[in-house]
Amino acid sequence: MKIGFFDSGLGGLTVLKEAIENEKLSENIYYLADTKNTPYGVKDEKFVKNVIYDNIDYLIKIGCNPIVIACNTATSLCINDLRNKYKKIIFIGTEPAVKVAADSKMNKKILVLATSITVKREKLLSLIDKLNIKDSVELVAADKLVSFAENIDCNNMNNQINDYIESILSRFNISEFSHIVLGCTHFPLFKDNFYDVINKINPNLDIQVIDGAKGISNNLINYINKIKGNKKYVQCTKNITIILTNRNEDFIARTKQILKNDKIEFEYKLQ
Ligand code: DGL
Image (tube, rainbow, N blue to C red; front, side, top):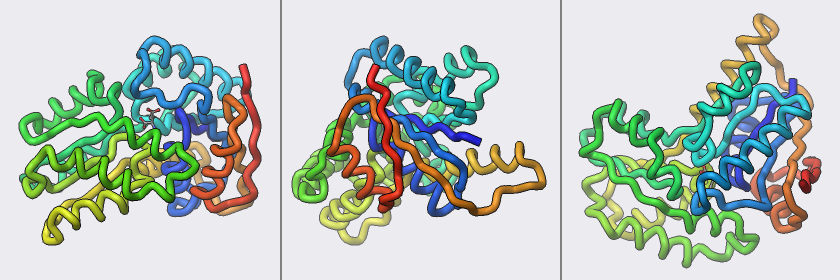
């Protein structure tokens, strides 16, 4: 089985890492990162949709099924269209984990951070409506975190990253919140930064910073187990191929840092 993963860049690696390390995913993985066009969240929606279709076409041509859309922005823009267009392909999407926060019934507010496209799309707004939590949710676009995550010097930029996070959190009375939902797959790379900033604001605050990686990985594993029936997968050697849409040595280095794995193959899709 070839499993496709798709993101504009590095963010989907946080989902892939969860699937490999905690769910023991052991299938052949093809992860397409649209390194040429990242970031998506601040770009024109029509342009982004077109490049997404082109990239998904590629994953389908090389035989991937299912395909994990490890990108909130792409999911909110076009997962329904993709499902309609490619009826034989199983798409596993990514949604900000607002339901997890709402289900905790802590009766406090929820802060959702995502890209500019995700915070204004109907998909997230209707989820919040459906959960009937409109009055207790604040949505903020935090696109700069995507650029920080893609930066090769990211590990030396903690001060700037923390300042940016603090500039967002300080817009609110943060003690009124029980959860910060990271609604972009790039953002979990900065979970420790979030806790550092919360702790700096007030060490007694009890705020959980959550993301959707576990939920997406579970959906993927359940799907694989379902189609493999009683042969449930056992751990075996897995091959990870990362496909880039431009030549980008920094991206390759960052991928190795994040996955802590040198045995990854890199390929290019240059047109
Ligand atoms: N990682 C993506 C997301 O979850 C995309 C971020 C971007 O390219 O702006 O939304």
